Length: 450
Image (cartoon, rainbow, N blue to C red):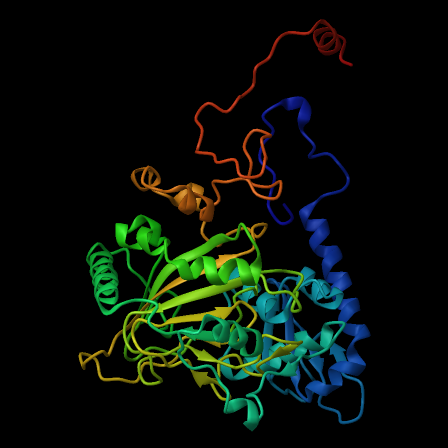
């Protein structure tokens, strides 16, 4: 894989290190040259930045795009502007990402943050919109239209909780989301909420809790419970909910896989999650096909003050994105009573909202369970064959095993060459390995150095 050093050969004769191509250092240098060429070609368009942006390729010294001169192409500088102007935004990125932006193969919001994590760099939030605009201007289609609230007439028809599944489907098609009223009974809500809260407390006590929505990565008041399949029979039973069969095949086809199964507890003092779509990892970016659907079961009343998910209605359609992914301006809270299933498709822009309640006040925590399904050919976020506990695997029904990828569908997901539709598989310990029988031609070839 590009960027990953090859290991030491196991067979000495199969050492390819002397090949003149495939050198990572050479590839990086070539990418730098190509990235610079891309930026130079885009300088007339980059004049729209009206700012100075520094661009560093990894640990290299940065280049500077000076786009301050009105009605003139931007300038690409190898050193800071002579007048000493400080960059309005700083971007540290792989040069290959710049090239992929220009080819339309990488979505800027995904690429910028992927590379920021790679190089362990942090951009100031107030400078991120400018960095995104810089990357958007490099793409063939240019910056997307700003994702905005629907017109006043459409606002009057925004989704509300209903038991009419046909209306929920119409809402999802038009607005990107809908609410299924009374998807869970009060007793079912109580059982599932107890399971979530006790598991959350257990993981905190064990020192393995996954916390987020704080000022630093991996910290904050919110808590995520991942791989719910491993964490109680209640969560396995919830996979039997008939709403799955009603919504998932209708929206994303048969044989969908459980991409992720988690709980999210939004607590007071959290920082709102950045706006995102759930199919952002699908690259090249494809906006005219929906690849996934999320079913969020509300385990308490969900409202704007306790961290209800913020959404931009209708933002699932077209080449659109918010100008500032760290702002909730122009969003609404997806409010619904406990027991509701909040269903939203994977292209809509959304994010966990701010919980502004006082810690310890009634219902100050907002627990919810999220089932995220993706089309069958998409690699799942959670690698269930690796993460599923053996004691849980023995409990799974065929339906659940299919969700987790233990069934061949559409000529994928097979085992040892058997990819017949509908075939179920378990992890094997007896897959055929190296079974060698000496062959006269092979032996003589080695002997003669052929």
